[in-house]
Length: 187
Image (cartoon, rainbow, N blue to C red):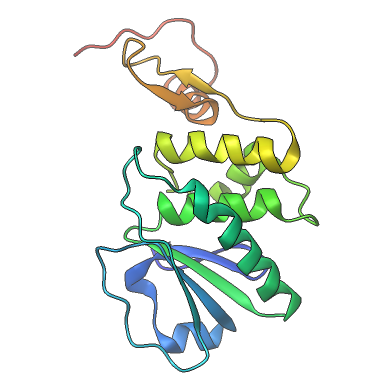
């Protein structure tokens, strides 16, 4: 899966999808490169690169970059230009940063929960790691004054793992087509 347009002027995807031609075709002038393990390809002059050099690990600090990336998108939007946010696979770091953008975007009026399902509709494979999601919840509280998603005990790890409530809801939907009361791990 290449780049996915998740909002007007905002694309999310894997680093391997990036080329000067693609950026030009979509009027993308800012590239958020959130993948230190992949080398940045040659780009045409005029592309602004914002590097977010964090690993896809729940212990990594993504928080300090959320406001910077959100501001970069608002500046792109004001100029009528686009921004692409990429990481290795286009599902955790890039999705987390795009979620922050939509939460901070005044005209979007989206909560983190709404932003998650908006991006998920355009790019179904997104799944920011639980550590990034916890940081996004904190960011939403800073920006909007409230949290629309909570971290919950995973129903399949005997309380050893906290997951965003939206992941638990998706699991319930996938397993039972709705809600369930008990999940017994077979492992």
